[in-house]
Amino acid sequence: MRPFFLFAPGAGAPSSHPWMQDWKTRLEEVGDVAAFDYPYMRDGRKRPDPLPQLVGAHRQALASLRTGTPEVTILIGKSMGGRIGCHLALDEKVDGLICLGYPLCAMGDRTNSATKFCRRCRLPSCLCKAAGIRFALWIYWRKCAVK
Image (cartoon, rainbow, N blue to C red; front, side, top):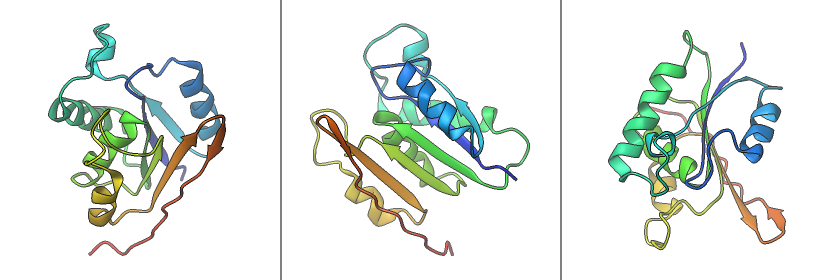
């Protein structure tokens, strides 16, 4: 069975952005992919909603876009979408997490970083960071038995 990827956008560009579409095409080679936009984007607003609303929208997308009962569900997100996916992964049953655009903190708030999430997460996770022109991978991949 093919894995199911729920793909969340970053704060500044919707799921229709060419960067998101390129990644979606790549992911479709290995699994089923559903991309979504947060409500503030669909409403044409620039400023993201507060964290609880973003997590709620992400949870709703997971519930409505997950078709059937996929054997493997992986959350993937660009920047803010990855950060919100981290919050969701702590509460929902998913099998993995891919974050494109580390660190996982709100703009201007470096105290709420990915390290806090990583201490609590028991999922296989991959955190990637863009560094200037070249793309550097910071991979944190861990496979833990969930008890």
